[in-house]
Structures are given as structure tokens and as C-alpha cells.
Image (tube, rainbow, N blue to C red; front, top):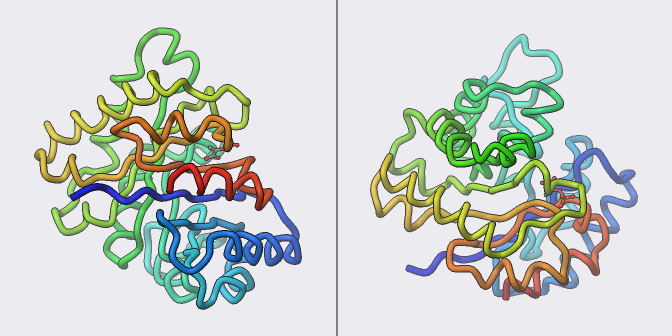
Length: 252
Ligand code: PEP
């Protein structure tokens, strides 16, 4: 079965409450009732509820930027998978490069979060990708192996059905340096082949792998034409409705 594309906008720590609601409404209006791909917006935690209200009855889904690996308890500052579901999230990011490299999140913590989120019923967008130093030393395939193996350890076949990967080379995130379609395709193909070796061809073939890193309406068509690229995780360009909608249109 062909994989349906997903375009998800990661707003990071941006927007006021009013800006978030206006942006969500503009995205929903532009996407319409039956888009040719899945579309999600991922606002900061405090705006999940007003954005959920703005998206009610529309074709745009809601996602969170992170999740904690426990269901409740003494974990000050954290948010559980159940809380995200209760406010209307379908998706959560896990292992975004800013969590790994700025906050210091480990592969082990990423694996625990993936388990908790999938067990609760969320769809997980798991971010992986190499740094510039790793790419310069041609270590990207080792990085994919380590991140994929660690993040997916212990998952059941049923849980893989709600797992999505985002290949985000760290050197392309927020830098304006988008990966070429050829480079991204090679990475996605390699990641899918690794998943096949680890978990079997059926799981690998069904797994959506998004591209992320300075994606724009101009670069999206070439990237989305590649056979192993199943949509995009969009940062900067998701903060302007018209720029984000151009990327959505390229996935149609
Ligand atoms: C991201 O944060 O996931 C991202 C891809 O950011 P940008 O599009 O700004 O590079």
C-alpha cells in the first residue's frame, strides 16, 4: 500500500497565544476539508488547548513537541502521554535534535518516551539525524544505526504502525542549508534498509520517513519526488501560513 505523506509544522518555542490561534486557523482554512496528504501543527505546550479549539472539525491534526515517559507522578515540568491525548494531540515528536543536542536527551530516554507514547495510543514522530561533524567524517550511517536501534528497541509490530521517522540532518535544521534530494533519498533509503534488517521488510516498507531541515516551498517538490521521502517536518517555514501551505501543496 502506498505511504500517505505527512506534513507537520514544528513551531518550536515561537508564537504568542493569539498568533498561534491565527496561524492554526489560517493553516486549516488553506488545507481545506480533504487534503491530499496528512497535515499537523505542533505548537508550544501552553497553546495546545487554544490551538485544539481552533482546529476542531478541521482536517489538521495536533501534535506536541515532546512527551515524558511516565504516566503520572513526581516529575516536575514534564507532560504525560495521557495528558497530550486528553487535550487532543494525535502526534508527539520524540528525540528532536534540539532535545538531543541542546537539552542533552539520551538514546535511552528517547526509547522510553517512544514506548510510553505508543503504549498510550499517540503517533510518534521520531527524529534522527547526524551532526555536521559526523557527516564530515562519513559517520551518518553509524549514527542512523545507533539512533534507530536504540529508539525502537522492544517495540511490538502493532506499535510500529503508529511510528513515523523524521530524518533531520542537524546541519540542515534552521540553517537554510537544505539537503539535496539525492542526499536525502540516500539517507532515507539507508534508514529504511536498516529497519528492514532489524524488523523485517513489511515494517520497513510501511514506515513513513519525513525529511526535515530548512524545507521550503521551493525545495519541497524535488525532495517529495524521491521514492523514500514521505513528507516533511517543517520548522521555520511552518510559522507563516502561506509558506507552510506551499509545502503542503507540494505533497499533494
Ligand atoms: C525542525 O525543527 O524540525 C526543522 C526542520 O526546522 P527548520 O525547518 O527550521 O530547519
